[in-house]
Picture (cartoon, one colour):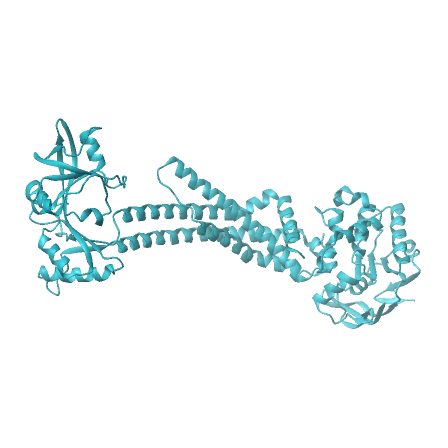
Length: 218
Length: 402
C-alpha cells in the first residue's frame, strides 16, 4: 500500500539546513495498523505530512497503492487526499457553525460527484453518532467531536486513515474508545497509521515504526 | 462544489459576523443608494422636460426674430419677421405641410362684469393642428374669417371658466381691449405645463390681432410643420437660406432670426441629462471604490481568522481553485447584498421625495441593474486578492495556525 524509498525533506532554519527526513525507507502493507512513534523533532510529523500528501519530499520516491505520488502537482495531490486518505487530527479540526452532518459531508462536496447525504449519515452511524447529526461541534464533547472527525475521514471510503495524536486532547477513557474505533476500522480492512509520542497508544497497534533524528530505527 | 452550498456557507459566515459585515458593506450601500437616487432625479427631470417639449407639438420648427443685442424682453427682439416671409417659406419649401404666423400679447378681457387678464394669440387656423390643440366645443375660426379679419375668438378652457363660470359660452360676446369678439369655440384642456398654461389663452385670426388688437405690422413667430417623414433639418436649412435671402444678409453677417428644431431641443435636454448622469456616476464610482476597499479589508481579516479552516478544507481535498471560489463568492455576496440594500435605500428615498413634492423621480430598471452589476464587480475585483491569498496558503502551515 505504502512504499517509500529514501525520503529526504530539508528545512531552512536560521540559515542552517535541517534534514527533517534523512533517507526514510518505509513499507506498509494494505490492512496494517501501524504506529509511527518518536520524540518531538524526530521527523514523525514531517513524515506524516508527506505520507498524507500534504507535502512533497525533496528527494526519494513515495508510491501510494503502486502510484508514484511524489512528483504529482497540487491539484492531483488534493484529489489523492480527497479520495484515498482520511485525516484525523489531535484537535479534531471540525468547522464551527456547521453541524456534524455538514462537517462529514464536506469531503464529498470536494470530490466533484453528487454529494449524497446518505453516505454522510451512514458514516456518522458507524461511529455511533446517529443522534447527534444536527449538533454543532461546540455542542459536542471531545470524544464525540473526534468521532465526527473519524466519520469525516472515512466518508469517501479511503484506503488509508492517518491519525495525528488522535487521543492527545482526550482523557484516557475516551482515548481508549477512540482507539477501539480505529481497531474496528482496521478490522474492516482499512490501513491505519497513528502518529504518536505515546508508547501506550502505539501499543494498540500491530506494528511500531520508531523515528529518531529523521531516520527510522528498527 | 455546488454553488448553492458555497452560497450557504458564505451567507452563514457573513451572518455570524453581522455587525462587521454590515459595516464593511456600508460604503457599497451608501454608494449604490446615492447613484440610484441621483439617477432617479436625473431621469425624472429628463422625463418632465421631454414631456413638456413634446407637448408643444411634433414635427415642429419654430422661427423667431433674432435678438437686438441688448435691451429688455420686447425691445430686444428684432421686428424683421413678416407675413411675406411666412408666405415665401410656404411657397418655397414643398416639404412644409403647413405653417402659421404667430403674434401674441397680454390683454385685458371682459364679459359683462367679469374681467380677466389673458394672452391673446393671433394665428392662422393651422395653428391648432401644428401645436396639437383640439376644439372641444363649437368650432375653430375659418380661413374666410381670417382673410376678412373677423372678430371671432377661440378660448382656452381656463380663460373660458374665468370669464363665464358655468354658463353657456358659444356665441357670447367678449371684449378684448374694448373690441367685441364673438366666441366660436372652446379648446380642449391640455393641462398646465408649469412654465406656461396652454389652457389660458385666446386664439383669434392673426389678421384681426395684428391690425385691431396689437397694432403690429410684423410677426413674432412662424411655426412650421413638416410633412410626414420629412427631414426637419433639411427644411431648417432651406428656411434659413430663404430668410437670409429675403433679409438681404451678406455672407459675413449672422442670421437675424432663429430657427429651432424640436428634435434639437429634445436632443439638448437628453445631452444635459446625460452629463448629469455621468457626473452622478463618477461620484458613485468613487464611493463604490471606497466601499470595495472596505470589503477587501474585511476579507483579509476573515482569511486570517479562518486560516485553520482553510487548512482543514485543503487536507480533506479542496483544491486551490475551490478555496479561491469560496472566498470570492463570499466577497461578492457581501458586495452584492450591500448593493441590494443600497438599491432599497435609493428607491425608498426617491419614493419619499415623490410623495412629499410634486417632482416625480424615476428609478430606471437599467440603473438598478447597473448599480447591482457594479457592486458585484467591486466584490470580484476587491475580493480577488484576499481569496487568492487564502487559496495559496500552505496546508501544513494553515493547520498549525493558532
